[in-house]
Image (cartoon, rainbow, N blue to C red; front, side):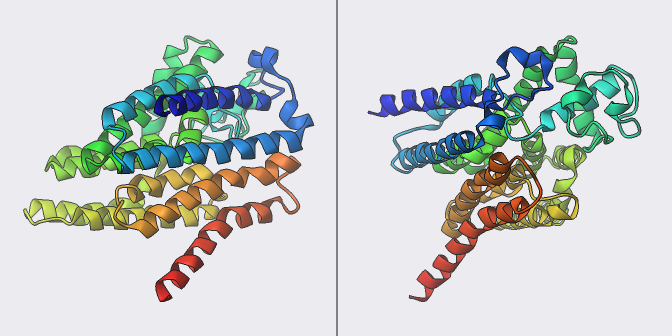
Length: 371
């Protein structure tokens, strides 16, 4: 039975990979042979399939979590499952839900191909470059930190000027840091259930292994900084947090907690690491809620607080609401997927879908506590 579920999970990931190509951009001529226009001409059907995929994903998530609770799976088997999952999802279409990976490619091309400063020069300024046809932020300068821009040189050069190879190289970079994050996560928690909760979380998998967002890299260095501090490697801990901040800036919010833990470490005082991770989760959640100041709340931003929340498996409220948020944020894509517009009721519906389930759970939790 267990082997059958694992096989079905891999089949599910394969079908999800196939489904992702229903969203191929019509202007992406590199993949024109795979363009069907299905998601644009059959919006209701595409949205229905997507919703079904999300629900099934969480069913598998529940099964794997149950196995972890019942000790039917160990950390070695978890990593084997994840490596195979990464191998399947490597070939998924990354712009099913977001075009960010194309922005990464465009920025790296400005620096490493055109030899220009991406913080001054926009990709759209290079007349005739096909990237401007399908890159949705070609009219913007680099949006992320300098360390991230430097990191993009790795997949840029591994792509050898070929778009498909470059795309796969970017996804491989993200996959590497996803697995590295889980390794550090395991080294900190030493808990199979905690690792499973984060590793198999559908939102983390979709936004990392499919969409290829760089948030997982930012959080890798953030978590690593605390792990190094725990091991009393102060210099490398500080360096790791700085690198995290210079990827996407959001982890600058962790500075107060990190400095407190650093002060405790220098003075050789005992540190309550559960409190450190709890407040780190709260600070990153605050950053998540404040993100509309810049643009809007994006589902992948939740990786910021999930990375710490699942280290606190004894806090049932925090873990449960993190799972609820993961589910509702993946459904946040539905209004646009269905209507094809960001105008009208779409923004309102996105907020209702994103926050109604967590709010309802909070009401249920408070009511249950009073009984």
